Image (cartoon, rainbow, N blue to C red):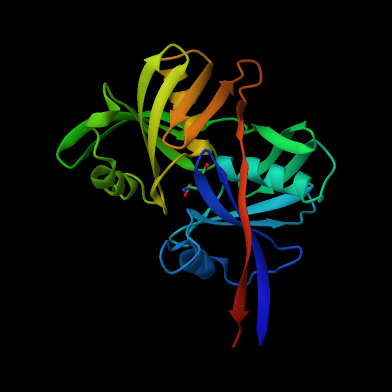
Amino acid sequence: MTRVIKFTKMHGAGNDYIYVNTLKYPIESPEKLSVEWSAPHTGIGSDGLVLIGSSDKADFSMRIFNADGSEAKMCGNASRCIGKYLYECGLTSQTAVTLDTLSGIKILKLHVEDGKVNTVTVDMGRPADMKEQPIEANGQKFTGTTVSMGNPHLVIFVEDIKDINLESIGPKLENHPLFPDRINVEFAQVLEEGKIRMRVWERGSGITQACGTGACATAVAAALTGKSGRKTDIIMDGGSLTIEWDEKTDHVWMTGGAVRVFDGEVIMNDE
Ligand SMILES: N[C@@H](CCC[C@H](N)C(=O)O)C(=O)O
């Protein structure tokens, strides 16, 4: 039997995913499809697959699969893109939307101008599991900070980010024995007060142009180690996000853009 699955390709700061509205197009094996569709030459090409669905606890739900098919608990960039998708596709007319994720319910605030969602602010909740982490890989010694934003991150500040060979060291740190569940890795450099340059090696997807939860983790690690205040712009390969770690509530707020790149359809030949 043949069936069509419509999808939308979107990116947040260059972190690109394939979005499927599962209310209309149910997906049976997202792990397998994420691997096939994310492949740059033989698939659609993306950092992974994001499923938008219903929820009995929130307005909508999000599931996120990395390019290797592994499921993550949270994705910052995808949460902003979902806000744009829901509003611009007419699935909601609200500018405050709740999103059920494997790391809890997140609140999206959509900033709308002329019917279009330009930027989205997400309440990313409280950071957790913060600790100083000495680590060695490729014969190099680093001291990082672990931060969980629902998913695990290791943030390492360096003098000059250009000295880091991310392609070589990223997989070593992702799969380091210290992290049995693997980890997302951020290398960061303070540029000036309130501005941090960051590059990311994502668990399950490798080098991506940006990571929303990674930007939050970097801002938290910077504030904890006295490298910045509570509000920071995180500048990544594909764009910037503004992160604020609120002192009163302990919640991290992420603000940034979301872009709809194109719509497409996949013709599935089900056996
Ligand atoms: N790109 C994302 C995070 C996606 C999941 C991550 N690779 C993991 O496995 O935890 C973001 O924008 O937060």
